[in-house]
Length: 385
Ligand SMILES: [Zn+2]
Image (cartoon, rainbow, N blue to C red; front, side, top):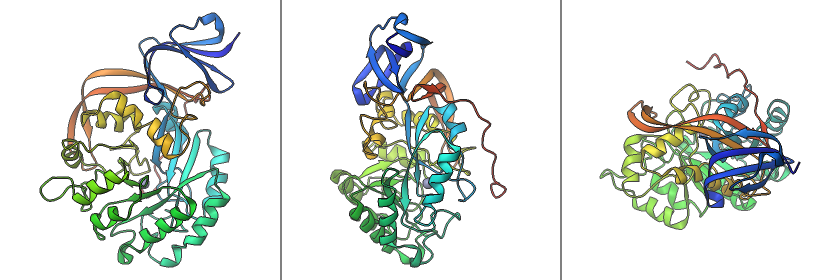
């Protein structure tokens, strides 16, 4: 027996490896062992029949909140992972310096999925729904850098939430501090945008190549389009520099109207992510495949959509070649989907509806070659209406 497991006869789509077509995927020792047109079933101990299924690398969700019990937003990732194909979960700033050690201990004890984090520049993280930057005493660059260095195997970037309800009176100061921390760590910064002030032009002007805007398609006052519906000049310049757009759909971060205006000018998400949390899990987000369906509805091709949920976020994490691909030697994280065509309602954060023509129904999630078991879904916390 050459391989432990064989996924046979599926339509493989792995943009990171330039693979598209009918291939068999062999898995051994938790890693992808071979991807070939025809690997005989006898070569493997066990075979999964993937005929009629789309086979992709396990999805990488770059914007989630997975620290329940300590933060306002947190959900348990494993129940959603098992039914959505998301094998790598990146927490976007739930923890700051004070609660990062507890977050890691919590994940080690309760979760099987692959997890990484962007460390909040606010030392208290997202314990409460907002106001994490209500005092600049919580915005300690040195402490953020120190904790990130102590957790270099986990921390993949720095997070800051910019906007009236979070950075408030301090305007650009939290962004300057978050950039200083990211600079010292040589890591990307992820910037949440929503309601001004400060102004979106001031924010994007400060971002470096590789930094990410999240909630990029917000319909709020920091939207990336001007009054005329055109992409703002400062945004164009940031995109030319290599600033990345993360969808970060969430409860308020995605507007079809804005996304369609930007898409018509060739501005599309580099990364498709959910911003999955207590107040978005039960709608309008549900899961990452649903966000991918919305990107398809914007006119993105299926290979581009899969790339934006596999290879590109893996590259942001500096894990390209290891996750988000089915290249031999990569972690054997795999997702199987039934692709349905028809007319499916899709809603944005303001409950504006569009009709999608493709549904991606996950039928199996493998983490290092093993299926994630089904689990009872998260129950909403008492403060979620
Ligand atoms: Zn978020």
